[in-house]
Length: 322
Ligand code: F6P
Image 1 (cartoon, helix red, strand yellow):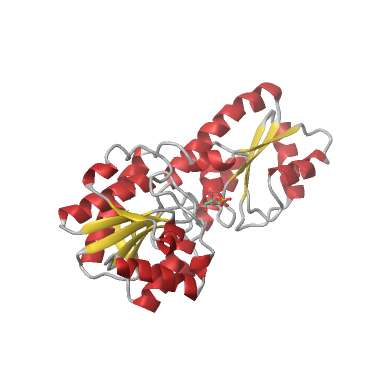
Image 2 (tube, rainbow, N blue to C red):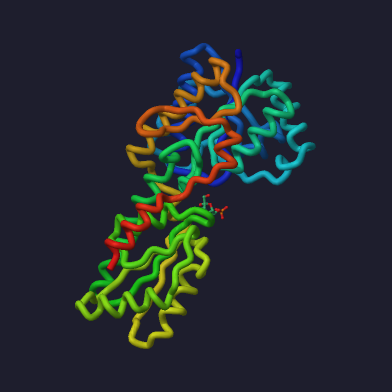
């Protein structure tokens, strides 16, 4: 391979820039040209790309977001859209792609590779940590640290006023952020998309804990929980007149900011191995780290196999909660 491309797609995640930097520097070290494709597949379709040199990725390892910017492309979901994108890659002599993103980005990469023979290697980049084939995805560590820091601030008010705070974190389909934020902030209740909680039994638990003089409570809810978000759960809790509830939605605060050291290192390792793998002929696989080892998982498995929080972690969180 003489020339490859790199793109970030789907929701941005802290550490994506560290991954872009590592991909560019590894490719150049291997004497391969590398093009940065802007705005994910949207930019690929529109021919929005440029060659990247080592200096283009200097001073970005600490920056959140993605210098390549990102998008969720509807057109790329169609065969015609992918045909247009392929033509752009052909015109620029791009033979392989490094795709940094989540499940949607992987699906697009797989279709492009199967339909047009472009070689692709994925890198898991999403704060949700819901990608099969890696213990952690890029951005997750930063996101939970941001969320725990926010909850610590809310804790001061909860404690001072003896209140319950229901705090909503991201994760439409995945409870990793909620579970880890909940455990890390000593929450009394954690509501995940993967599990249906009974609000009534939670209220019973709160009554029990108030009898042992627990004066304030923090409840973490993932946005995709079946009982609803923070506001819906707070409304339910308010039916008990003795409960003084407030809500907070952390929202996109969790997706921004300077990546943690863990995310920078993970991103660098995964992107380094992704480029080496691509140049060695690997195709339709995604890099990941399992038990501290770098692994490659077929993209079709990463997409189709579900990764959900460990039942034993959920059980532990329940035991430690109240
Ligand atoms: O996939 C990352 C994520 O932040 C999810 O946790 C969240 O549900 C979704 O993206 C929000 O997406 P958007 O920023 O496009 O509204």
